[in-house]
Length: 472
Ligand code: FAD
Ligand code: 2HG
Ligand code: ZN
Image (cartoon, rainbow, N blue to C red; front, side):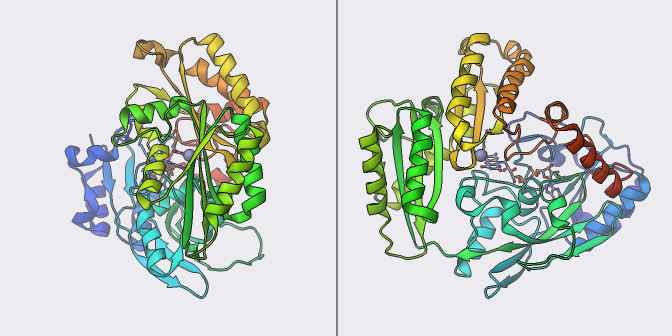
C-alpha cells in the first residue's frame, strides 16, 4: 500500500523514468523479502535509478519530503538489512540498474565499477583484463558490489586477500541530503586526514548510498590445488592451518572448516554431492593453494603438508582433486551448506568470530552449554578458520515443533553470544548487523563505541532517513 502522494511519485518518475519505478505489488514482491523468507516487509515504492545523478535526485527529493530509503543490491544479505519495515511507508532504492564498468587501469591494478555490478561479473571482467579480483562467496552470482561494500563482505579468500574493505581504494557516495561525494581515488597512499571511505564500507546503507568504487586487482591465478581433508577435531584444524601456512605462505588461499553435521546436510540435500571418503569423520577442511605461476609445485607442497599432519595425528584421511570438475565438486560441498540447512526447517544463524587460537575451546564450551540446555538441537558449525570466523548455526531438533524452536531463539542466541564475548569475540564477523542483530549489538557492543556510531549517524543523516531501524 502506498502512503506517498501521486505528486511525489510523479516527481520521482521524472527523475528515473518509467523503467526506474516499480509499483505493481506482484513485481515488488521479490524486493520485500529475503531468499530464506526470514525477513518480510512492505514498501510504498521500489525505485531503480540508472545513474549516480538519478540516485542523487531521488535522495534529495526523499530528504525534502522526509521519506525513508532502504538501499538494496542483490538482496542476498543474511541479516534483513535490505528489507523495509512493515509500515509500508519506506521506499526501496535498488541499485541493480547501475551496472557500468567505468574504467580498468591495468598499470594501477584497479577497476572502477558501479554499485549494481554483480560480483561474478566483476570477477569475469578482472579475468578478461588478465587480472584477478579475489572476493569470493556463495552468493557471488547474485550479490552486488554495492552490497559487498555496504556489508564489508568476507567469504573464502579473506585469509590471503582480506575482506571488501581491504580490496577498496575509493568510493562514490550519495549522501543523505543528495550531495554526491566523489571519493573515487585509486590511490594506495593518501594520508590527507580521516579516511572517509571506511565510514561507508560496512555501514549497511545507514549513512549514504554507495554508487561506485575503485577496487584493487591482483595478478591472475594460474595454478590451483584443492584438497578435502578429514580431521579428528577442531583443534587439529587450527594446528593444520598453522603448519600449512608455515609451509606455503601466501599460497594458502582457502581453508574452510566443516563439521560432520554440515556435511551430512549437504549430502542429504544438495544434488550431486558425494562423500569423498567411505567413513564419516568428525570434521573436514577444504584447503586451497594457488599461485600466479602456471607450473607451481602446489600438489607436492600440499602432499608434504598433509603427510606431516597425518604423522602428527591432525589428519585422518585426505583427497587432492585431480581435475577441474573435482575441484568444483569439493567447493560445491562447502558452498552448499547454507542451502542444505534451509531444507532442514528453521535455522538460527550466528556469524561469530573469535581469535583463531580460541576456536577449539569456543566450540567445545558452547556445544556443551547448548546441549545441556537445549537437548537435540543440531549444531551446524563451519566457516573460515583463518579469519576465526565460524558460522555457528542451529537447526531444530528432529521432529521438534517449529514454533517452539523459534520461541527458544533468544535463549539460544544468548548462550552463543555470551560464549563468544567470553572468548573476546565478535557477534558479527562478516554478515553485518541489519535488523537481525541490532538488539544484540546494543547489548554486547561497547557503549562508547555505540555512542560514537550514533554521533556519526546523526551528523551525516540528521533526519534518520537512511535505512532506519538497521544497525543502530
Ligand atoms: P543486499 O542484501 O541487497 O544488501 C545488504 C546490505 O547492504 C543492506 O543493509 C543494504 O541496505 C545495503 N546496501 C546494498 N547496496 C547498497 C548500496 N549500493 N549502498 C548502500 N547500502 C547498500 N557474506 C559474506 O560476507 N561472506 C560469505 O561467505 C557469504 N556467503 C553467502 C552465501 C550465501 C548462499 C548467501 C545467500 C549469502 C552469503 N553472504 C556472505 C551474505 C551476502 O551475500 C553478502 O552480505 C553480500 O555482500 C550482500 O550483497 P547484496 O548485493 O546482496 O546486498
Ligand atoms: C558462508 O560462509 C556464508 O557460506 C553463509 O557466510 C553462512 O549461511 C550462512 O550461515
Ligand atoms: Zn561465511
